Amino acid sequence: MPTKFIRIADLCERLSKITEKNAKITLVSNFIKELEPDEIDVSVRLIIGKVFPDWSDYTLDLSWITVIKIIKKITKAKNQEILEAFSKTGDPGEMARILIEKKGIVKQATLLSDYSNELSVIDVYRALERIAKIKGEGSRERKIKILENLLRLAKPIEAKYIIKVILGEMRHGFNEGLMEEAIAKASRIPVNVIRRANMLLGDIGEVARIALINGYEYIKNVKMKLFHPIKPMLAQQAESVTEALKEHGGKSAFEFKLDGARVQVHKQGDKVMIFSRRLTNVTESLPDIVELIKRELKAEEAIVEGEVIAVGENNKPLPFQFLMRRFKRVKDINRIIREIPVELYLFDCLYLNGNLLIDLPYIDRWKNLTEIHGKIKLVPRLITSNPDEAQEFFKLARKQGHEGLMAKKLDSEYTPGTRGKKWLKIKETLSALDLVIIAADWGYGRRKDWLSDYYLAARDKETGEFYIVGKTFKGLTDEEFKEMTKRLLELKIGERGRTIFVKPEIVVEVVFDEIQKSPKYKSGFALRFARITKIRYDKSPDEADTIDRIKELYIKQFETKARK
Image 1 (tube, rainbow, N blue to C red):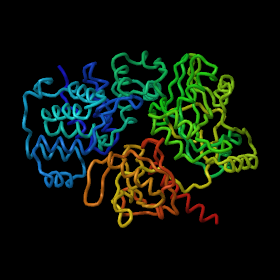
Image 2: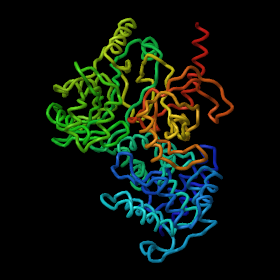
Image 3: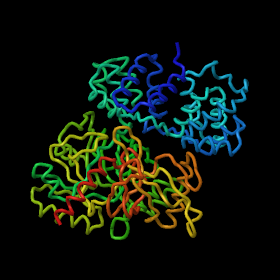
Image 4: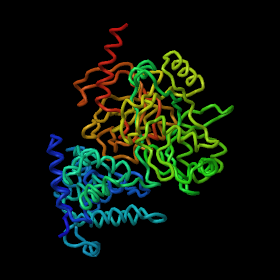
C-alpha cells in the first residue's frame, strides 16, 4: 500500500522536537525500513529536504514571494494575517500550516484530478519533479499551477513540509550525514560502506534504495559514475608552514593556493563536463577549458581536479570576482572569453581509464596526473621538510598574487566531502572565516535601498543548523551591495520589520579582530569588528566554517596573546 505523505510530514515534525542524535537516527531508520521499494529513494531525499541530487540540473525555482502568493490565493488570507502567522515562528512552512488550519482551503475538483483522495509520497515527489522539469516561456505560470494544485489537496501539516522542502528550510536537525547513519542502521551495513557509496554515487536516495533492496554485497561494490561529480575533499586551516610540517610528520607537499574557482573535470572520449566545487555543471561557462581538456588531457577516461583563475596583463591573476562573471553569463560567451581569459591549473587525479584512484596516496595520484596532463599547467608545487624553504615558497606564492599555500600529506588518500588535517590551507591571516548569511537588514541613508547589514552564521557540524555569530555592513562595494540585495530577495523566506530572513545559501569570507563570548547569540560567540572580504559564490553552505572551528579560534587567540 502506498505510503501517505502525511507520514513523512509527521516524521519531520517529530524530528524537530527531538534533540538526541541517536533517537533521531533510530526514528528515521525504522521509518525507511517500512517503505515500498519505489518509495525509498524519493522519501529519503524528501526527509532531508532534497528533491534531486546536488549534481542534478533540475531546479524548482519557486521563490518565497511566489509561495506567499499561492498561500494567499488558496486561503484568501489578508496581508496582515500572513505577517502575523509568520511572526509567530519565523518559519514559512509553519506559517502556511497556521493559515490553512485557520482559513481552510477552497477545494477545486477540476484541479485535483491528478491525485487520489490522499497524497502519497510518490504524488508529492512527482509533482515537485514536474515543477522542476518545466522550462521555457510561460514556465512560471505552469509551475505555480502545479504547486497550487498540490497544496489545495494537502492537509495543513503536509503543506507545511511541502513548502519547507521547496524553500530548502527543513529546520529539523536531520542532515545527510545522519541519514547515512540511519540507512546503515536500517540495512545493517557498516556506515563507512554507506558513506563511501554516497560519495561515489552522489545521491543519498539511490544509496538507500540499493542498501535496503540489494544489501551489503551489492553496495560495497558500487562504482563511481562518470559525469556524476564526487564531493571535493576539504582542508583545515594551519597557522604556518611549521605547523603544517609538524602535522604531516616532518615532510609535506606545498602547492600554491590559487585565488580561483575549484573545478572537477570529467572526460570520456570527446565528452567533457566541468563541475564547480558546489557540484554545479559549469561546462557552458568554460568552453575554452573544455577544448583545452579535449586537446591536451592524455586519457580516454579521467576525472581530474584543478583551479580555474582569471588572468590579466602579463598573465597576472585577477581577483576572484572577475572570474565569477564567467559563471554568471553564458549568452555572449565568446565576448566574455575575450574580456576575461582564464587558465586551468590541475592538482589531482581521482579516476583514470577505469580505475578509481582516491584510495591511492597523494604522491601516487600526482604521478598519474603528471603522465596525462599534456600542456595543461600543474599547480606550482614544492615537496620539502625544510620550514625555511617552505616559507620562501609561501612568500613566492603571495608575491605572484595568490592566496597562500596548500600543504598535503604525502601518503594521504582522497576523502570526498571530508574536512581534515591531511590537507591544510595556509594564508596570511588566521582571523578569517567562511560564514553564511541567514538574514539582512535594510540600510539607512545612502544604503536605504539595499540590504546591507548582514547576519553571519556558522554551521553546527552535527545538525547542519546555522547559528548567528555576528553582524556586519562593512566590506562590500556599492555594486556588490546591489547584487547582494537582488540575490537575498530571491532567497527570501520571510521578513519582520526591517529584517529579511533568507535561505542559508550565500557564503562570505569574513575577517575580524577578535572572537568574544556572547550571551546574545545562541552560538555563544560574537565576532568583533567583522568585515566581508569576499563573496564565495563557489562555496556551498555545507562548506562554511563550524561552531567548533570558532571555538578552536577562540581558544587559540588566548594562546597567541600568552606567547606575546
